[in-house]
Length: 181
Image (cartoon, rainbow, N blue to C red; front, top):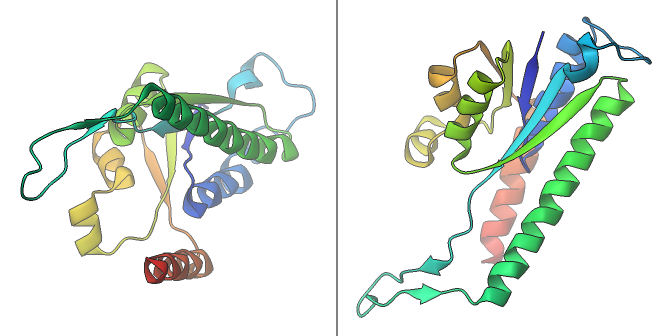
């Protein structure tokens, strides 16, 4: 069985990975010596949005576009690469701790589209996603990767809802962050 788990910076995505490792993969083949069959048992996918090299300010007189300098572009790309490496390392370590063979994949583009494309190209049997626990209004405005994938992926999709503690931590961090602004 080929399982793909989508990961990002959220606690919800890592909870989904932990849940999948505890409830799905453990029952299949925890092993110390991977065979050919098990060599790509789980695929971790992370999709980053492409960096916009320009911005167009809104408001009166905001018709001129601003372009990022090459040094800023390089700095942002370096920060994205470091972030990707940290995410991969954390997720791969979780798999290694469970003695589960995993491969990782980093894609660039719109996450919901790229995840669905990857499941189809890799002929995945199950896609596992975390849920941020957005309410109906926020989900309608912001959109939901998990909701989109549930309707468009060509394989079964499991959306793992985080426990209330994680949801409360995330919303309190968000409130603290907004208060600091």
